[in-house]
Length: 207
Image (cartoon, rainbow, N blue to C red; front, side):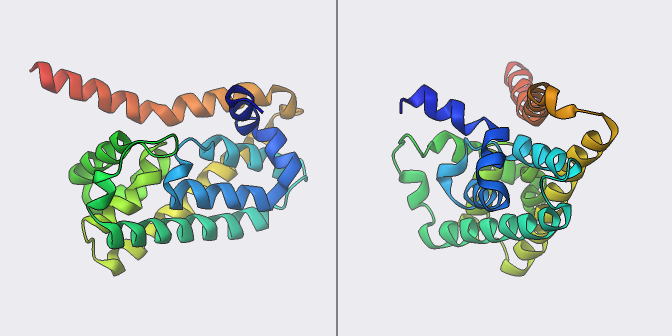
């Protein structure tokens, strides 16, 4: 399997859900939020699509809203512990196919700007949510505080994205036929915060 075919299959969220169901959804959410290799995984679009599948009775909404948030929370816990243990070694790590230091540095800037709230806000920002818990660990964020923001952010992210898909699936008949458009809209909206931050940075640098 070539690289292009690999990524085509990876972003075929409908195919992923039909193939692996709830187990695969939980695994992807854990890897994206807990391991640095998950920054390219389709978190938002996967959860919205899962909500649509739940509306069509292919998945259990109750299981999605209980097991998936748990995996999101555990994922961030793992990321925090990695950051706390490895510390600055992460920033000295060389780039590889699965690790990009620039994403870690952007996340650190995000954390410096928003503080502990980053753990919640990062859930809704692709790339940043992968590295935010590790950065919090490197910054030695108080563990109790991290756990609070982690649980709140993990539950909020999963519930909002899954329910968004569920309500869209309930309101629009045969939405599965237009699933690719839904995914494109979700991807576009999820990257808007990154675009806005880049624009603000350019304006600030020019000023």
